[in-house]
Length: 155
Image (cartoon, rainbow, N blue to C red; front, side, top):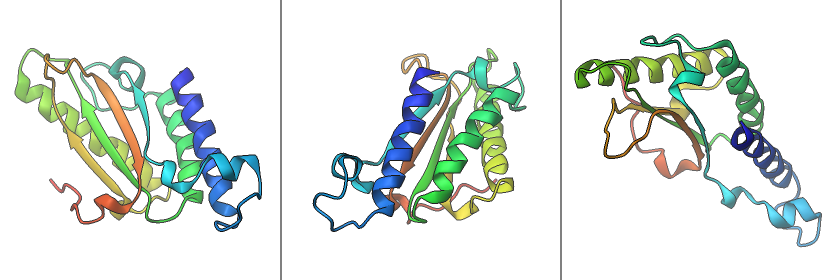
């Protein structure tokens, strides 16, 4: 949770810095310290805190957390994309985990689109579960347009 609030604070500072004159050398401590070039920023949630077990249903708290991210993202330039990586280890079967992680990523994408983020700004991947990586849950990265040529995943 602490990581999430640090992330939101960083996004607020980046947004404030971008809104000021980009060429000003000494406009404020915020604009001197945080620039749009400081992106990407990443935030993570565990599967337990983000979803109901064996389901793509978003928990209420996860929706509230995404709403805070949306507030900041809506004020950032359109060349900032949302990259969503979802991992799942709810099942013993790797295919079921892959399908669940894709469904969860699509649920997050759908939530963001319903809240006004253009679909073209969202990229997602479902990874299932790889014990060697040890990653579980949701990883959201806000990043500049270097990913703009990557087509959104359509199923």
